[in-house]
Image (cartoon, rainbow, N blue to C red; front, side):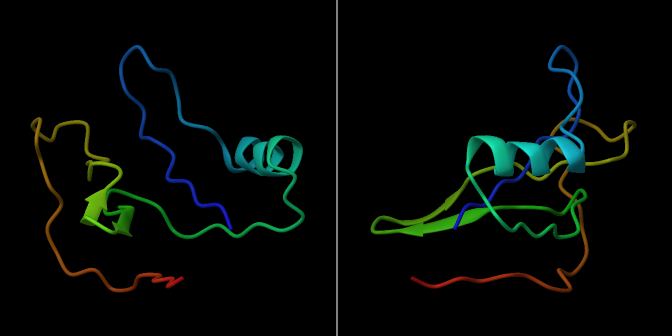
Length: 85
């Protein structure tokens, strides 16, 4: 099982991949035969649980270009996906 959280657009780094580009990557590079897309947005976060505890893989960002650096979205997380191994 493979998960990805694409980055938001950043100056000098170009645009994030489109859903078609992600699908092609999973199919052509990773050999996936099925894939699923979840709603993204400024509250998208990936957290891994390891032997040494939780590790945040990406930083929360704002889709609001006027938001100051270090902005963290507020509000309640309505849903999440937890997978245990």
